[in-house]
Length: 365
Ligand code: PMP
Image (cartoon, rainbow, N blue to C red; front, side, top):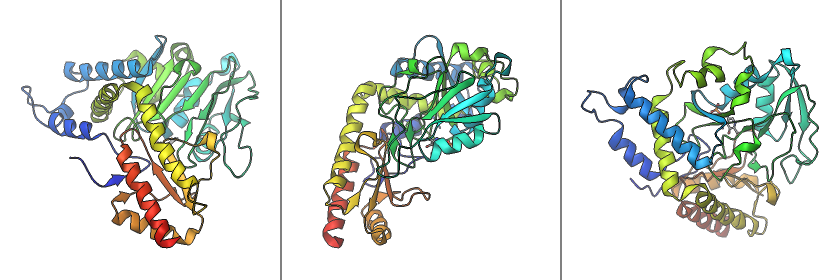
């Protein structure tokens, strides 16, 4: 059902209308085997076909090179905050430390978790206070005893994204791409490992995509519990533990929808138009609304903005809700407002938001 209420939540978030309709029709009806799609065993041929199909569709969308493996794992991105160090540290080969770039809220949380397993070297950080920007990527000095170098490609809370990737030489780059995954083409070959939890651009919560270069699967990962062990997961073809079958089926439908939309280049262009519409409404409001992130570093997925008079924020949220614009409250750490414009948000939703913003300013400005 096409909704006239627009959900701007940061995640779980809006899914494509076509996918919701298809899921209703295809996932819950029992077939000749007496089972609905979500009732079938994960080791059976029917689910295996769904899994292979989803993996192939994703690999095609992202042009994943042949020497990478695509895993659909249970859990969220925070599970990967631990899984990454558990899998990639390799003390016998002298890889005893880990490098992180500090770009904001989620990179800090990733570092906190990693510090349980190894010494964390912070190789890059915020340039300053306002406007906010991603760390400059020119001069990261990553010590050679670091097992990897981690960055958060899109900071969901802070609303900022890297305009370019750093060069970390022989140290593999690891990206938390949770909130920008599939929002635009992504050069997988620049990274040793990419992970993204599903509840933004992939599907429902409970699943995380991990794309890992095969040579990294040779690292010992002795401390990794079996469900967290990339090597075991890749070798067993999702047979170590029960994979999140519902989320994988829905993800496959989302991947198909993205291909139908024209692939990631077309999707990125649509996302650019949506974000430009909202940022220019903010920037042309004469200071009534402000965006705290520097223009070249603004996320197209999570648009963070504020009312200069913060005492109007609650009025704005109430009015927006009444106008059918929901979940616009900023993250509790930073306050203000945030509109998440993931792939499934059409331009019409953003149009409704900027119309409301102009109307609110006329009444309150
Ligand atoms: N990293 C980023 C960039 C995120 O946006 C989030 C969730 N919003 C997480 C990690 C944590 O993901 P999860 O809740 O799926 O563990």
